[in-house]
Image (cartoon, rainbow, N blue to C red; front, side, top):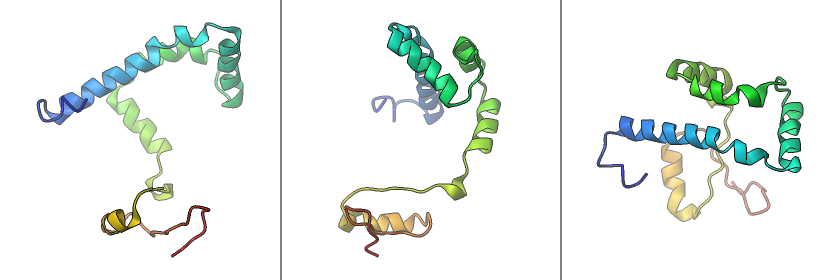
Length: 118
């Protein structure tokens, strides 16, 4: 993907990335249900996440039928930016100023055990 950036317009790069994601989601399914354990895992997903019984039968068609409008509607329904928590890991001396400039909200510095340092 890095090779494409700079040589193609960003929109084209994004469309290629989406196409690759769709292929990855749909083409891997047959190989994901080869053993009884994998099939049981697929059924467990249906039960755990309260999916309709035909979820895996319908999956490829629904992914293929995805449109930008449907994706935008789903994102507006599911993604709540005001409820996000960003966890950023790195060398504090190198990244803190840049993180604060982003003005994402309150910045808390934690120690390795998760205790607030400041």
